[in-house]
Length: 86
Image (cartoon, rainbow, N blue to C red; front, side, top):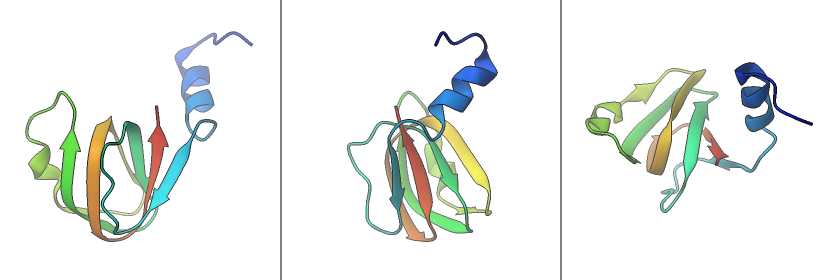
């Protein structure tokens, strides 16, 4: 099936590929394109490829927040992350 528009592409990507669910274990050497936080979560460390200032994201993420960026490492002190792998 050919991808006809951006919405269809996003629908195909989110949840159809590999997903990783994690809690407080450090996630390193990753290639996430999005991380969803279904519950309030606290980020203690994060590395984003091709970005600056990601240390500002070391904070509490409200439930329902999604970060769309190339995350290569992330550590939570509490909460749950659902990561979507490129």
